[in-house]
Image (tube, rainbow, N blue to C red; front, side):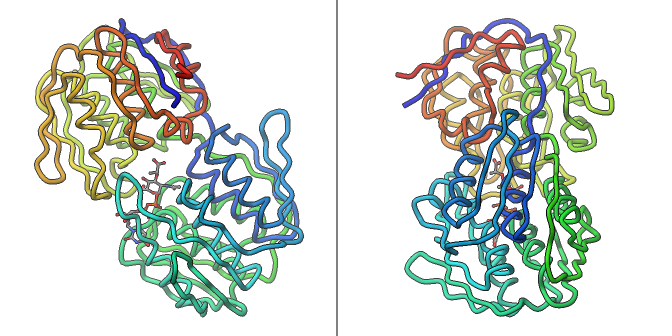
Length: 419
Ligand code: EPZ
């Protein structure tokens, strides 16, 4: 089991570049299934989940080539299968994103029902209800979603919960449907907008992405396109929090400040001097200890659930008491017991963590449980005395490109143990 060993030290000081967004790359790769012409994608992060998605697309019959800059060229000219097998889906829930494109292009899809994961049950009932409303026949049995459809029919769909991949699946399916589809209560995340930008480059007719109502006029076919993936706002935020909790200075380049307004506002409340340019953000604590902040997660543009664990780590060493309320997932405090092992004073009351800041944490062996929880343990270790070993870091490799190299660029003492 791979581990990361981090030796706590002084303030971070340096610059890193943000990679392309994992949660934009995954749906955009699946969008290539909608066309028999090539889709060239650049600024793709080199992540386990991207490799898994490429493998899945290959199994469906798409030709995948990766260039020297890790750009991905997908050509789904002749699909030879419409099945997403369980052994792939169980490692990556986002495989559900082939459902809409396969149904729209191929008229059939057999996708293993993604199980739950550490942070919650993660149902896909809204994906299925929307596709049924577009005319698909969908049976869910023996752990598989079996879907069939003639040409999908445009319709009005009100999603009962804001769902990011649900919005993405239905938006992709609607691009080839007959007539207009209106998605109400749609997710507004920047990754949804980036997917819509890519689909428009392919010839789709979409408007309203980034708002709660998205309108899609179906077309008969999509064509070849090139797309550069939006920067990863969660990776950006993770490095900024690392700079703040170590009382240092971190500049993130190749990013976009407008992607994470809510997070930047909270970092300013914590006492950081935040400066921004078109494609960079810098936080500077000038050696001061951060003040505790309170956050409530909710769909974009509110504070993102994917930054919740990182703010638990920040509050663990901040001055004062901060509360962290998780409103999106039902079990997203798996990092709390691990942070407590490092001396953090956190108590859980329902979906709220009450965090009483300590000047320093103590190193301890800890275990990663999900992607963002593991990132919070790594950055917490930067503010802990001694060497912390984080186990099960395959979770990290799914979502953070070269995290130890990037943190080392900021002055962190971090190494990978292949123990
Ligand atoms: C996406 O997951 C992201 N993953 C998650 O990032 C992110 O945490 C989440 O959105 C929320 O922002 C990708 O984009 C690949 P949801 P998704 O559907 O789409 C309920 C990371 O760390 N729901 O928006 O699966 C669901 O249970 C990952 O990068 C239904 O009830 O999340 C949850 O409570 C973790 N029925 C809420 O909606 C459905 O059919 C939001 O989930 C779908 C969702």
